[in-house]
Image 1 (cartoon, one colour):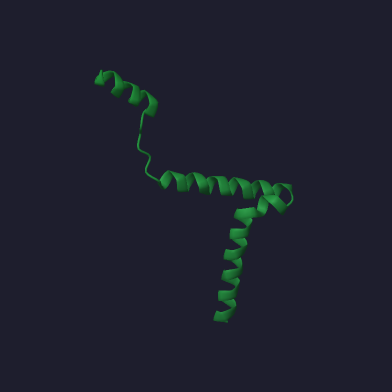
Image 2 (spheres, one colour):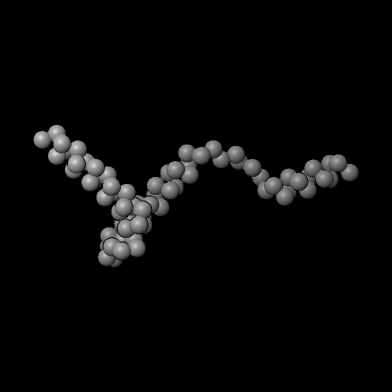
Length: 70
């Protein structure tokens, strides 16, 4: 019984990865939209975990440094 449960969990995980990863390329319309939206939400969450150094425009900062150097 435990072996069957492990197989079902693995099928669910692999199916979920395929659904999110490439589901919008081969699934019919409502499911393909769900797949794309899910992937976009996951991407936004993952990008949100990365440190975002609130930099101003790098070129403006460089211009300011050049003006201060003169």
